Amino acid sequence: MREFEHHEPCMGTVFTFRGLTTLSIEDQTEALLSATNALHKADAIFSLYKEESPLSRLARGETSVADCPAVVDQVWNLCEQWEKDTEGWFSAFTPQHTFDPSGLVKTWAANYAAHKLVDAGVVDFTLNAGGDILITDQQSREEFWRIGISKPVSISSEDAGVLTVLDLENTIFRAVATSGSAERGEHIWNPKGSATQKDVIQVSVIARDLVEADVWATAAFAEGLSSLERINALPNLEALYVLANGEIAGTDGVLALLAKPTH
Image (cartoon, rainbow, N blue to C red; front, side, top):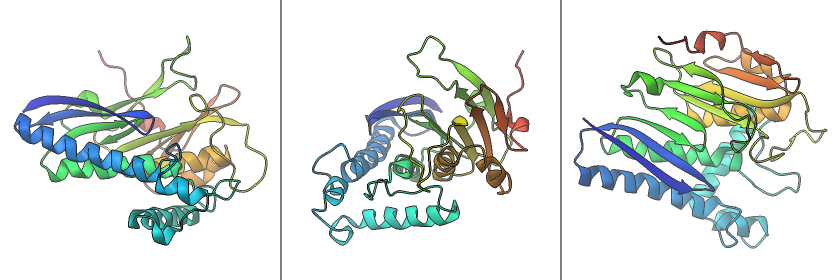
C-alpha cells in the first residue's frame, strides 16, 4: 500500500483526494486523471460563472434543456426529486426563476469522481470537496474517520478553527456536508418566498451519501431551526446546528457521533 494525496482546483474550490492504493504510480495517475476530468466536465457544463456554459446559456434563454447535454436533464430531474423529498425547502430555481443546481452539483460531481476512482481499483480514500467530506467504505486509517466541523466564520478570520469533531468509524455514515453564510455570504435563498431565516448560521448534515448530506444541509439552512424536527424524523440522517445566538442544537443521534478525546 502506498499513500497518495491529490489537490484539484475546480468549481471555485479545491477537491482533495487522500488515501492508500496498491496501484502503480502510472495507473494511479490515470485513475486520478479520469476522476478529475469528470469534475472539470461537470464544471464546464453547469458553471454559471462561465458565460458560454450550457447552463449559462439556458439561464439567458438562449437554449433549452432538450438542446443541452443529456446530463443537464438528469440533474434537472434529480433536483425536482429532492425538492419533493425536502417538501420544497431545497429548490434549484432561483428567485429570478432561473435553473441553478449549485446546491447539489458540486457533491454530485464529487460522487461521480469518487466512483471513477473506485472503478479503477482505488478504494481506500477520503474526498474533501471544498469542505464537504466523503469517506469510502474501505477507508482504513482511523484518523480519516474523524471529520472536523469548522466554526461558522471565514477561514481567513482570526477566530477560525474547529468547532467540534465527528467520528464516523463503525457507523453507517460516510458523508458530511455543511451549509452556512460564513464563506459565501447569503447565497442560499428561501424557496418558499418568505423572509430569509435568521435563527441558524450553520448546519452540518451527516448522511450515508454525499449528495443527500449536501441537499439536506442546504434545505435545513434555508428553513432554519424548524427543520430540526423534520430531519430528526428521517432515518440514517443526523444534523448539527449553530444558532445565531451562539448555541448549538442537533438531532437526537448527533451527540453519539462526537469524537471522544484521544490520549
